[in-house]
Length: 475
Image (cartoon, rainbow, N blue to C red):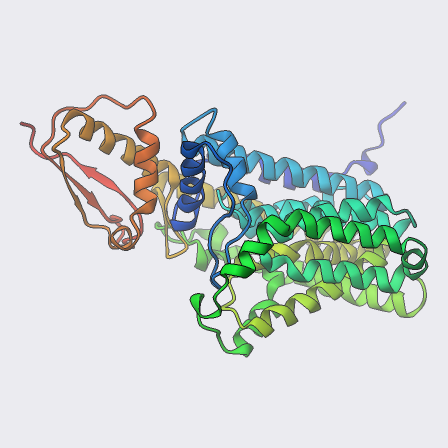
C-alpha cells in the first residue's frame, strides 16, 4: 500500500527538535537560591534518615509541599552530581508532558503535532522544563489533569473525576498558586455535569474528603504556623491584574530574551523571535472566540467544553492573584499554562478547518523562528557559560565545575584561604555551599597545593553567580 504523505504530521518535527535541544546540555540551566534550597532540603532529610515534610517557603510565608524534594531525595541515592539530577528532572518533565499531550490528541481525535509544537517550542516552556525547580512540574501535572478533564466532559463516568482529583491534589501540594485550577474544574462540573453531580453526589463528597485527608499532614501545620506579616508585602492590585491577564506570554517568546538574556547579547534569531509572538497570540484569541461562539450557538463538543473550563480557570486565576496582591512572577503562569495551550490549539484547529494552507504556513513560520532561537540560545549559553539577567546567571554546569576544583584545592590544602567577590553569593551563599557539599562526596579532580583562591564575578560584569577559581602562587 502506498504511503499517503498528505497525512504525515509535519508539525511534529518542530517539537521533536525542541525536545532534542532540551536534552543536549542538561547542565546549561539555572542554579540560584531556590534550586539550591530544594537540594539542600533533600540532603538534610537524607542525612537525618527521614522524609522531607515541606518544600521551599514562598513569598507569602507559606511553605510549599515536598513533592519535588522527595524526588531529589530519591535521586541522591544514585548520584551526587547536580547536573545529572537536573537532567533526570528534565527527562521526567519532558516525558510526562509528551505522554499527556499524546493522550489529549487521542481523546480529541486530532494529530499531536500542533499541540506539542505550541508547548515544547515555547521558549518559556522549553527553559522551565529544564530547570531544577519545584514550580516547573505544575506544567506536566496540569496537562495530565487536562487529560482527565477532557475524559470527564466527553463521557459521564466517575473514574476521570478521581484521576483529575489526584492531579489537582498534587498541584495544590506542589504550589498553592494552583488554587484556581480546582475551582475551574468545579465550575465545569457544575455547568456541564449537573446530572452526574446529583447522581454521584456521595462519590464526589468522598473523593473531596480523600483529597483533603491526603493534604491534611501538610495543611494542618501550615495553618498553625502561618503568619500573615511574614511574607512579602502586598503589591498594588493593578500590577497583579496586568501580570495575570498577560499570562499567555509563557506560550510565546514575549519577554524571554529580557528575562534570560545571554551574556554575549542577542543574535539575529533572538531579534526575529518577536515576529512569532503575534502568530501564537492570534491562535489564542481565535480559540477563545471560537469556543464562546460555538457554546452560544449550541454547537459545543467535548473540545469546546474543555475550552470553556479553560476560560473559567484563567478568569479565576486572574481574580485569585489580584485579590492576594502578589508581585506577579512569570513562573506563576505555570499552573494555568495548559488553559492557554488548549485555547491556542482550538484556534489552530478552527483556522485549519477552513484555511488549511494559511494556518499551517503561519504556524510553521512561527515555529521555525522559535526553534531557530532555541538552537542559537542554547549555543550562546553553552559557550558563554550563562546569562546576564538577575533570573539567569552562570549555568549550573559551570558552577559545578568550579565548585569541584575549589573543593579539590581545599582537600590538598585544608588551610586554603578563600576570598569571595561575588556580591550575590555574599548575600546568599547557599548555592555554593550545596555544590561544595556535593563535591565532597564525589571523585575530585587532581589539584596542586594552593594558599589562596579567589571567586570572581562574571567577566561580562553581571556579577551574578559566575564562580571562577583563580590559581594563586604555589607553595
